[in-house]
Amino acid sequence: MRSVEQVTDVVTDHGEGPVWSAEWGGLRFVDMLAGGVLTLRTDGTVDRLDVGRVAAMVRPRAGGGYVVATETGLGLAEAPDALPTRDVALTRAPGERMNEGAVAPDGSLYVGSSTWEVTPGAAALYRVHPDLRTERVLEGVTISNGLGFSPDHTRAYYVDSGAGRMDLFDVVSGILLERRPFVSLPREEGDLDGLAVDAQGTIWVAVYGGGHVRRYSPDGDLLEVVDLPVPHVTACTLGGPGLTDLLVTTSRGGLGADAPVGAGAVYRVDVDVPGLPVLPFAG
Image 1 (cartoon, helix red, strand yellow):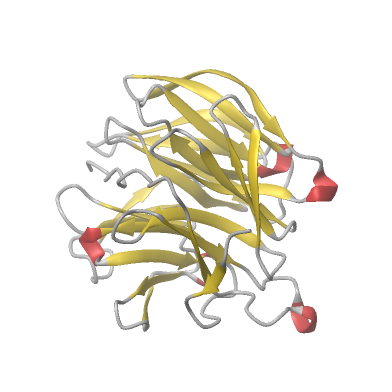
Image 2 (cartoon, rainbow, N blue to C red):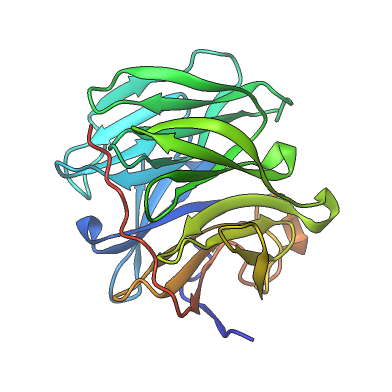
């Protein structure tokens, strides 16, 4: 059994989207529905930038700074600890908000959405090109969630939590093609959520409501389950000096007075296989 360590205090209501980058000195994550971008410093303190009503995901930019998904689009910042100064609109649909996403091997950014009411099929997946052109590439989504790419950049793994399924795509020139089912999970066991892919091509995926992270082989076989002490496990990344720290965000949202101690904190698990360096957004 792997050892699980709590590495922050309870610093989020709904922690999400962890990502490791030297651009900002280590781990960054979001307090999604409170609009916070949080950075874990080397001394253990956590700094916070408030960027609006929603901060759904964050990634470094190839030219410096970062990109953050906001309620209806993206915010572009010019420096790691600066507030965004430019916006990119993605939706004007009433009730739609941004959720998780990732950068593709060609430097474009994929970001998905949900709705505040979690209306089945009312959300989408968007692609933002390096020149900031936008397109809606997937319709009929309920909760667009984890997205990650294989080490050879030929496959993408994608979670629509509303469907209870992780799907597989082929990747050609940054485009996602030939969607097909990869892994399913009964809803009573929790909802598949954010994910990370390691250097061997295995996929770590958080299970919201299930209190654990699952590891799957590139063939979809369940290899491992890592239990956490809180039920709402939201997302994970691989970071640390050797990219062998599995860093996991959690949520206390919706738990109220029943929230266990540590819900809303970040946890760390030592793993054997390193992760992949984060892909920066080229825009």
